[in-house]
Length: 100
Image 1: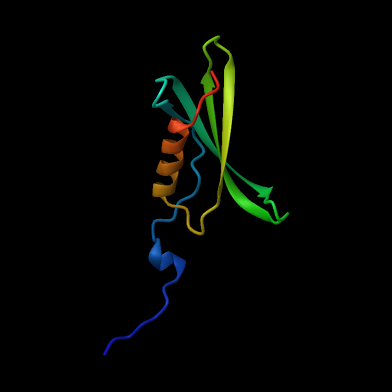
Image 2: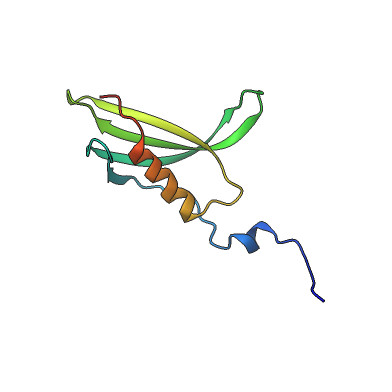
């Protein structure tokens, strides 16, 4: 005989973290340009006009003419933010297409 019960979110993901408040310096995977990456918490309206909580991942880089450029990616805020999520967002930022 076994006993089944539902797990709550803290039992499934005990290592919940908050967004870091610092910038991460990385290298773009295709162009090898330096990229500064940082996170901002916010909200946006979905197509159905429902407001959802998001994580915005900003990337700053310099184009071939030396101009300062920015990219922004938005992701739905997960129920429980983990270090794995942040690592994935940073990795995606280093793979994004740069407008050079």
